[in-house]
Image (cartoon, rainbow, N blue to C red; front, side):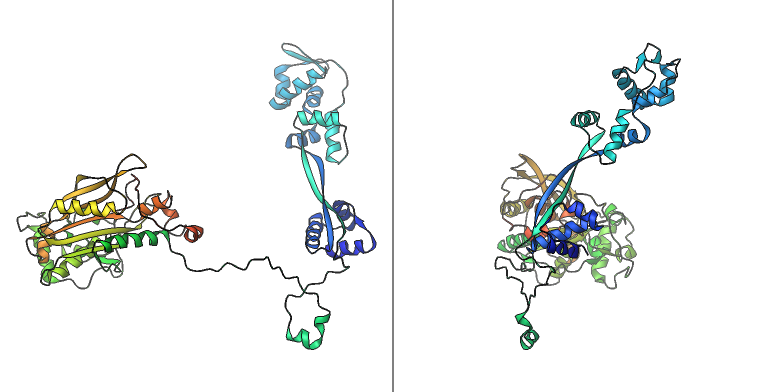
Length: 497
């Protein structure tokens, strides 16, 4: 309807002077007229020129005065002929009207302000402020002096009205024809193609961008970690088994059944299947023995070890559960030194915040060989972290249930100019290794860190939920740069093991 009105009018007239007036004349919404003019202008049916008009509109305060009168008029009419006390007058008209009204009425010389009394100076006044506001509300014009007075009192504000003037364009037609975009067989056979108006081909237009797969930042950093381990001669452990039994996740690691980490507040236990079906019974018996009464020079934990606790299924809390399986399998054959690594997902019953999720990725490396010492562990760690760009390391004694001695690893952060914790390490305890059947002179050194922490540093992400989970911005996945060597770490603890 709006398009027909615009094109039909221009068929017999040269100009639509004002789109606003035209909309009123035709009884059509101005927004609808504007949308049609923009469309016709784009196809060169018309040529449109902008029109801008500045109008004044009442502020909320101005609307109140237009309805109820100005404060000075309200105050004047509230004063009886004999006068009134200030306190009574303020109570009568209200605080806001009293404050503004006294100021303006005194300025207009309408009232006499005594110390305690207020009285009229004149018998009658006109509320010119209200009259001016009503005129603006009704669309009437005011002189500049009155406009300035109302502006100073913030009773009016400018409003810019936008519209168009319209003339015929180079491709004007009384009725718009929809240009054809395809030449069909039917057009050719019927001869219809002679009458068709084809849409002009835009040789500058770009095609739709080709979409392909994108690597997540975690995958890029994970690949770099894998390459470092492979360069150092490690082989990857199979870590695709997210569900573990408490036996492999805790008991085989010489972690007591009363340990806080085995509580449901820290670990996700499965409802179905709630328990494991099979465990190596001879090994289970040796683990039970070492927990209850010790052996191999250890006193054990001196408690009643329960099989039903060991059978519980859970989502693994660390990839060290995989390490325990791999070492046990290694012990069943003639001993051969091994270097193992893994980078995979683990699960903790954590409260979610900017540095913690209920699941994250753990990086773990271990070396199993005869006669290894703490010095060997420190040397391997120097090699490993130097490949990450951290050449200055320090070590601090720590406690882990399954390593003794244990060390926290600190690296010097060149950006922060201080030492920050970057991982944990240690030598697996004899109470863990000997029940597996490994030779007595075999030692295992191991260390671990997280994947999320270095990735967050590399890509400038300060909230782990922006990196991993359902809130991740897909634009980040598409545009993130290639991962580079030279990782640095934050001092925030625990997005890692």
